[in-house]
Length: 122
Length: 113
Image (cartoon, rainbow over all chains, first blue to last red; front, side, top):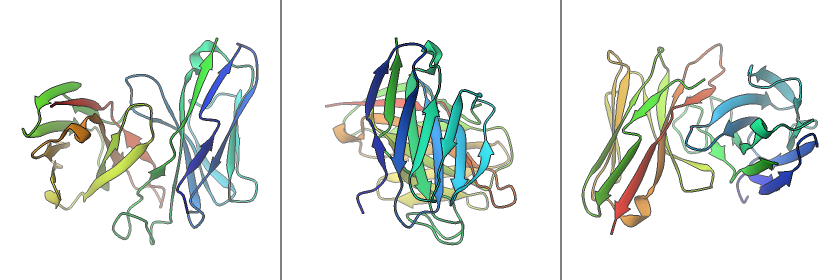
């Protein structure tokens, strides 16, 4: 397993265009998270899935944003009608259920992040 | 929204010195984690401390937690150039099994060779 993969790493688009990011989590992880990070700030939670179910969405996730995880494996994050304010790094992370963890002690949710997809909206 | 705030926002020290960064948070937590981020990359988990613990060690890292003050500190001893990165605290507020992590604003650490 090579960890969490994100594609593309960089995307430059014009305002108004749609963009889609893909995330492939660690295969045995059933939780998948999307975060957004702007320059000089910490990651901000967008949404998360347990298997194929989207269990929580942040108020940051406007109607222009949609995330899917159709088979409980990879996930996509689509942004429609992009705006300049959407320019950010979009980070994907995965983790195991609370009872079984990767790097952390039992009962804690430790996230493994991908390298991120940087979006620039012109 | 950010749950925590790191202090200082930026820190520059000479290689070999110790680096200390602090994190304050607002609500009761289940555990607190520290992550490192190299420029333009994803975050890497460093260490976790539970709400019933006061101190944890991992190699050159030492984390303390004071739940009464809602604060944590990360100490990196004998710093190396490779420690240059941004460091974020993240808190987990258990809510019926949902341990969503909320990250702070980060401390940018620069180690001067």
